[in-house]
Length: 206
Image 1 (tube, rainbow, N blue to C red):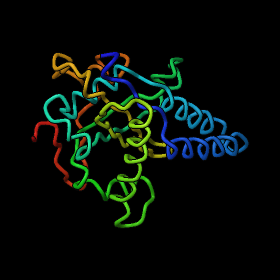
Image 2 (cartoon, one colour):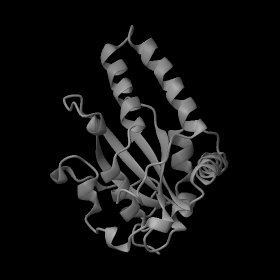
Image 3 (cartoon, helix red, strand yellow):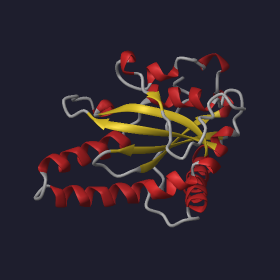
Image 4 (spheres, one colour):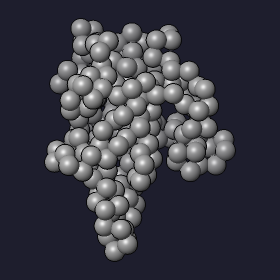
């Protein structure tokens, strides 16, 4: 899905977060070299486009059935650092992931991103809105956002955003086995994510 699965360029918010993360990496070099390398790999991992993963999350959200789900639902993933892997696309293994209605996981978003109570909705809307404005001005096409909250041990939790161009979306792209596309090895397919809050996995709830 090379045309319909284009990953979005970094938004101003994402760019600022990466600059902040790079400062943390420099500080950690003198305190904990391993942690510094882990965070450096994390910056690179979230900065490069991974088409297979983008396609997988497009399938997971069900945008082929309902494009509006890009504004109401999101992917939450848990990461594990795999320093032995030399490919920047796969420096982190997605061990668990799931699709959730944004309104149901605002406490998780606020906790992961160190936001105040009640700030999650506004933060997400601003984050997505800035990127959509950039898409509109640069391409003029309609894109469905794919919002991802990435959480990993030893690294910052971050929001990531890519998108699908709806005008060129192909219905035959959908695969029910999308989990096998998330990581480099299909046998490392991430397990379904269960949240402590009890928020329901909404992959099949339309």
